[in-house]
Length: 196
Image 1: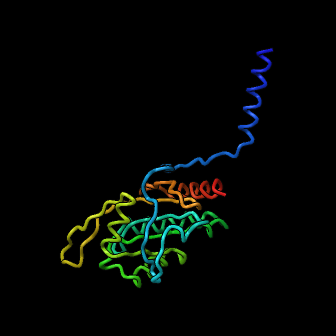
Image 2: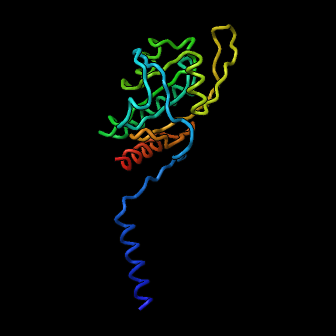
Image 3: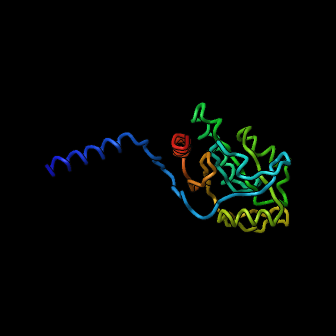
């Protein structure tokens, strides 16, 4: 009798597990529950103040960089645009955000032209030096000016990664530089599938 009960118990557990929706299976780094990257307060390229709450209901992909970046930043934004295009109708549920680390040169007008060249729905965010430092610290993004041949031709060394939020505004993924569009598209699909 005990064995029969044990077998029935195991079968019930298997059936309950089979009826439970499967959780996400990410290919990039799952950082769900970390204590950073909770919010931001910056201005978009149209002059509108923005926080994370403005994008509830969408998966948000954030990248920190600067418009005069020669390689990493345009590569990242191209990758995001490509990944988004692979999502079909779900592409409308993804918001790309580019946060400039170079507020001295990256004006709202310049950001507007830059980010929309990759995807017309992408948004550029800018703040003054203090706001930029604050949001970078919140996301544990490291950045530093590297002198160029002239005072105006400096570059910025910075953390090269994407941060992905689910539609409820929870930071879920850290996408390191060098991933491909198919991998990012897969993980965005998982975020959207498992977030309702």
